Image (cartoon, rainbow, N blue to C red; front, side):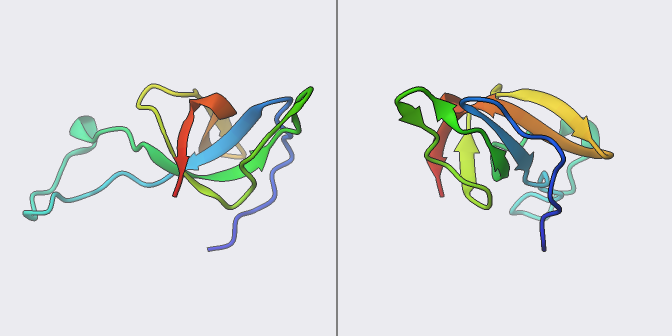
Length: 94
C-alpha cells in the first residue's frame, strides 16, 4: 500500500504516524465491537521533522514504530486519522 504524500510538515522533533488498524477479532475468533477496541500502539511514520539543534530525528517516513498507549495527539488530515507526537514518545522501531 503506497502512502500518499502529506501537505503537512512536522516541526523540530515532531513525527506524524498513521496508526495501524485495530484488530477486528481475537485469537479465538471473537469479534470485538468498535466501542471495546483497544487503541493501537503500532503505526507507520508518514512524516518527520528535522530535529532539535544537535539532536537530529532518527526515524524516517516508512518506519514501523511502537509508541505509548496515550502518546500523541489525534489529528485528521484530508479525512484520514493520524497521530502527531514527539520522537521521544516512540518506544521502538520494528
